[in-house]
Length: 109
Length: 121
Image (tube, rainbow over all chains, first blue to last red):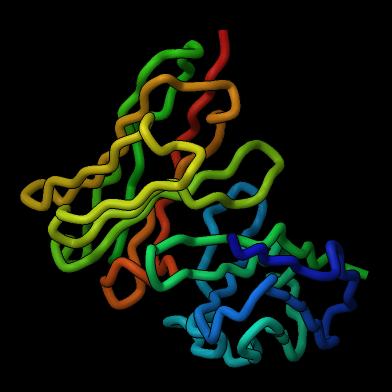
């Protein structure tokens, strides 16, 4: 079973600054990785899939990179609406399985 | 507008059963694989189950295999999750989600607002 580990657990960032979130897989997952944003009391929202493809209507300040075991979500200039919890997720090819990381909370510094 | 609307969440006793529904609108439901994801109170996200666009292929997470059944009615644009032998650890908000590109792999693109299931005596 592939384990997804996110770091840090909490990231304190000032508005306008860059935020860099990491996700590590316990074994290679190629580029089969997604990132989600979740705000309190809301459903998750897909940001990035296939490691680097932005989902529909996602602002360009969100970018994903990496392949294999190391992945990064970068928010280039944090806006007030970006403070939330972010999850990475691996999707296995066969048999299909979906594994989430434990999440990184991005909070206001 | 693309929308998923879950319903059916409730308070149920341990060992009980419950059926969740997810009504889809704004897209061609029959072309999309669908999934259920849950989130226990204060915890992270956990994949529960997925089903192919025609309903012929299903997959389950280890924690629910043998107890939950996913199904769909494409004529009603509705996804279901039948849950039995419920346990306290099944307490969670359950989300339905559509799959990117409609295939039964990949990311979860569109999410519903969730329905709350509480298992307690």
